[in-house]
Image (cartoon, rainbow, N blue to C red; front, side, top):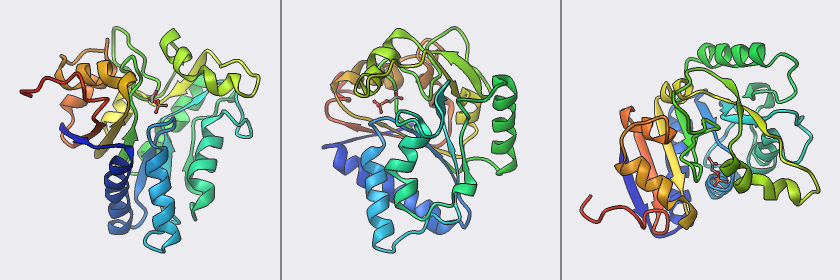
Length: 246
Ligand code: PGA
């Protein structure tokens, strides 16, 4: 796991977007795994800027997103589909017929997870998976627990995740769903390359566990130590608790 501490979120977004843009330009039909939340937003902005300068086209990429809230349809402003449309897809030439999402409104969750798992396989696998990290060490919505999940599954969100994300729902007078569908740890680990972004003091404990802790489902992100190609981008605040002699 390569751990890179940068001055701020802007520097991180430049470095992370460079890797993604290079991937897209080097391989026609690249398969990208995207994340939602605050962490990747600046990186998406840099990709949009590169698209506007004609330095990259997203027309032929296939995309998979990590997760989606149960009960929210694509038009809901708090759905992750809406987030991606608003923060990246709708501002570039992404072809929506190659955008893949777990459906939060599927009648049969199990069948929906199986469908998504098949889609990832049929795509040939994810070339780069972008990740944030929860304050509790989750990746996607793989919450702390006693085992790692392989494929996509329905998850009950922990109080820590609800506390971190409920502000987005409260802002529009809604209550946050308690369940979500998420890619499993196996899906994430089968990605060829992984980029994790963590910024801010609130992530410092989870980052310390990720970098210095043992691999354990109690901090799901720690599994990334077993992957051959992971780059972790940190700002000074999220890296603040790391040992100096690392
Ligand atoms: P954030 O969420 O980017 O909004 O901090 C990250 C996560 O929960 O994985």
